[in-house]
Image: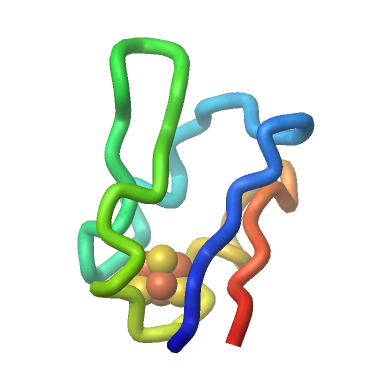
Length: 61
Ligand code: SF4
């Protein structure tokens, strides 16, 4: 099962992953944090990993 991991040392909350994920895996919590809300929905397309401007997401296969 693919699973996205956010590196919070790199994340600047651009919310790019929230916008590009076709499965709505990510969710914005409050104003300061993006979380992997529904990892079970991930289809491993890697759009989040490729498009994150900070390189903060790794999708584990
Ligand atoms: S790999 Fe694709 S489906 Fe999985 S979290 Fe990233 S954008 Fe969403």
